Image (cartoon, rainbow, N blue to C red; front, side, top):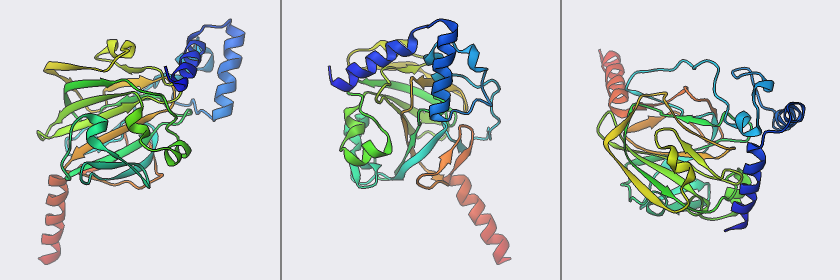
Length: 275
């Protein structure tokens, strides 16, 4: 077992341990202060019996978001670390550090696919959601290491995404195109929870699950959660993103429009200008 996995396992045991109430509240309070965690949308600090319960806290009230088919929402609270078009089977983990997509998701994508990397810090809401209506056709669990995925680590090391443990969801969007959502494990993130396949959290070796019929996800549905901060990567086709590097986004925020809708709007504006 790699040393990052051993350390993460130790932290996981600590995070799941239920200390006496006063000690637990002190631990939770220290974490909130150190990482400047905002709790306005969540339960009271005293309601979390373990540090893991605080990490994986749920929203007290569901956020409002655009439910139309032509708009895609952010899957999580995060910072956009990198985005761009796949080129010759390569994408970027961060500027200057590329990786082979087919090694990452076990599928080679065409160059009309676009990728976006969302980094969840230790202070963020650690659950992730479906960015649009999807049908999950296949899940691929890929065992690996648990390197840090913070900006400093991504800039220093090559192929972090390929080396790390991850769950790849192969989906189909409402327009019939393949859509991929990848949840990457990281340092202190020993498990990746997938709600509709809870057994994945305990997988020890790489393996896949086919879903027949596919698992339906509605936009905004909770897909799963991380123990601590990590990364979500989306690969999509025919979606035009309105994002920039280092931009902070929040689950439910509209971040892209389907190209057919965008083209129709542009054509309408052009016609109005012409006439």
